[in-house]
Image (cartoon, helix red, strand yellow):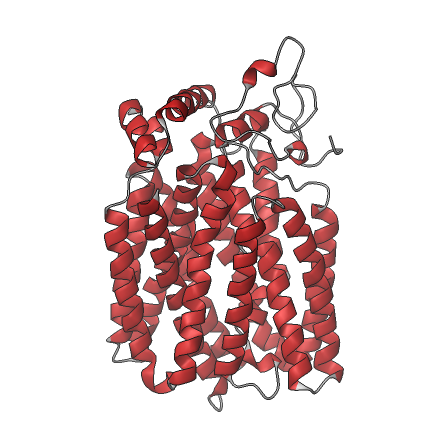
Length: 473
């Protein structure tokens, strides 16, 4: 397990550093005289476009050659993209390098959470998946610190060389990490799957029951397809979470230094990066105790208030200190609700037989929805000003909060097999609640005749029409 964690932490660190490094080029363009909003929009969307393609690429890679090789592919793309960017002699060379880096970021964004969710136990799965985002946030903060001590306009090539070094380290770590046991069981290689469970630190007394449950789940879900009625609620919910991640205006808060008067690019990015990493660490500490649902809803409520306050501040407040505090609160609120949690829920709720299609498609929507938000911001801000846009972000967040309130589940301390059985039962996703058993210790024997298995809800276990929402159990 340690090797998987180290590999995913390193690839997250490299991807975060690369993401921040490419974003700083946009800030340099914003500061350049005569650069139009349209040109800035085109530059800003090049990385999300490539990341969208990289995220989709993870599907066939994870299906055919495995999650581990998808992670290796992400490291290779980050190495290639950083080399092309560091050695770029023309603007077109640099643009191509940015596109390759974007593809590597997208591939890492899917591959690392997927393999972490499959290599961890139910009681700490939230923390393990969040570790990728800890690495990603650390990379962004490291880039911000580098800018404080060096002029990015003169040292941007150094930033890409650092990305290359981090990516090589992640490649080596991924090479020595084990494959996903779920992928091996899906391929029918049960002996290798059991061996990997042992390598991941599962005691023999827990590994054998775990392996038996995975095998039973593989057989039970053979007819499940991505658009099966039981899977559609998962697609709707996780897709809505990806949309919410963008309609809050998070991208324009995280990487738009023009929001605070009196702060230069370096100071703004340090403020945002520190707030982002601090909140990610808070999520890491609380995700498996407080739970996904509570953190998500509290964060969304705080994000809505922060966006509305920011809209007013942009019109009436001129103090850089007050503006900076509002931005910091907005960053923390968005990270608390829409940082690791939507990705974690996608990796938890997607059934085994459709994971390699469903997870890449859903997570790629994050980059797809990012395109119009990022592209339109500068153009709209030039004509309308930033305040109306953040007012719209705040209203959209409030609407999303009202819609998600009744449908977001909390599957902490439930094994992936446990969650899939619940989803296949056709019951409302909202009824999936935190379990009291550690992974490998679930007791299905409580489900006598006429009783539902203890899957976190109290709905009847009989056939039911799949629902996205539903009453509280």
